[in-house]
Length: 467
Ligand code: GLU
Image 1 (cartoon, rainbow, N blue to C red):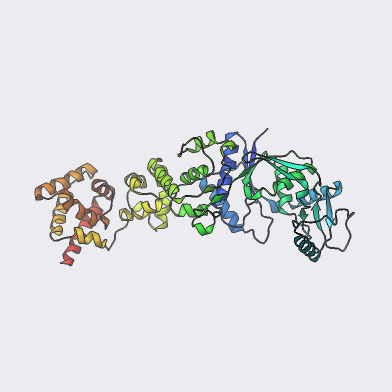
Image 2 (image 1 turned 180 degrees about the vertical axis):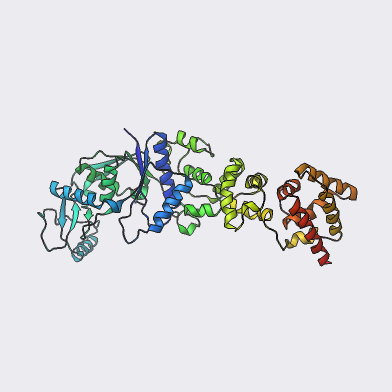
């Protein structure tokens, strides 16, 4: 059997964390088994589906690196096929026209509720023959009345549902348009989906979909329903919990691998390993190891993982992502040091790329203001003199390397009989605008001689203006 999985989002919003995890698990399963991963856009709800959402989903998938072997397929392009299948089910006697009006259904519902029965369609039109012209009708699937459906769920184990619990589902609306359960079934069948991996919010649909597949004589796929993701307050993860859109994580400075690593651990584990390369995820991923119970989204852990990835990934890779954030700040990376060197200098202290970009602006742009606290502490009486000496000594350094620059600062401290901090800190504030930066030799090497000297001069004038 060729393993074929699919991710089938409805384009009614951005790609959220839950959707991304479903996509990742489906992707991993296909990759692990050398199978096929399909992207299918379930856009039949014409009122709620938007092109903007489609774009957001495609953008999210691309950013995460979840590549698909086929698609994106759009269900709105398959209407003829769905109609053909509806027709087939009608002809076979597995579906029928239902003429019950909204009012009649509402009345039925009220009666059932009053009798403390579960509200469900009572099959009144089950025996209608053919199509009565001139009357509005939906098409319902004739669900078997006896027996049970057993979902052999690869995550949750066997789930047995009695057919008498399932009423006759509408598969075509009065305007002829197919409903969700029908379109999913037809596509899963036509696309040869071997494993339906999706959120457990769909578990109620599964026995109905299995019955339709059986009526069509199709092979049943395997099912794996993934447990919910909860917010820290125990409620289902939603916008209320902050960033749930995948692209928001990019905007907030996360690396896609860190988010993937976080997502793979959300409901799945492999011993107590926390950090996985993509290859390891593919190698170790098993549906058997997916938790049965819901998992809780933990921002702190994601942040920790992001820092691990920032520190330990190839700096050139991190630099490519940093470049986007630097661009967001309106900075041209050509105006300063190579981003890869900035990454090496800043990665220990930056938990996100947003932090890293913000803490690196001074490498690329001059500034007019200094951090107030840093000024109070370091631009003290006489510091302009120290900076003036530094300026002259640094001006003589020809080979502008960290070591030479460092030596120059040490020598001056010794000559002036000051401890190193009394020289290095005013210098740091002069060139960075604040008292926070990588080691002074690294900072100056990255900044370059010209900018360093110009900023020292400017700081001297500033200190003079304070007195
Ligand atoms: N389109 C459905 C959704 O976005 C998923 C359907 C499925 O995976 O079967 O929730």
